[in-house]
Length: 245
Image (cartoon, rainbow, N blue to C red; front, top):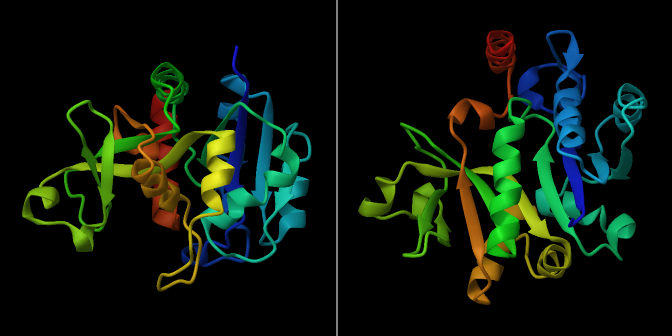
């Protein structure tokens, strides 16, 4: 069976939380939200779980000390692509798949992630991304698929034409990659954007331009892919999790 490393993005400050606590440590039903993500990574039988930490890293390490994870440090917040690159020293000889989860997306189910992994392996794609349908996708990148159902391109809202704006399928920001392809392509992206950051989704056009397969799996419900960015969303997540029991 092909091995799986799960990398969890957990370095951010979470300014909109209006708190000095690292974003991923904000509690949902009395547990740090990142614990839900780590639990998921364990349940799907990850061979290794790496938490990428940055802001107040000691607090995050302490909160996750008993969770059987290793850590990679992103000292400077230079974007999600840069964050994943921080795991390369630990994974330089690794040749399996890398699942990238976000420490502030705690509502994903095992079934959805297992279907993402299955589709990735069966299609032998370089990358497979999780998508979601949104009634009002304003502001989100749209997924354009080719006739075979694979990703042809991701169009940002501001760049989309009239027909593309009607597409409701968006990029949910959860990915699985072939490890060697991921690290090779991360060297090829730039930070030529308003934030001056290296974005993980920028590897997708690299694969597509090279004729490599990029697959996409749609989550059954947008709720699963929700990121937690403020206190109201934290409360909504608590309600969703309580209702699942």
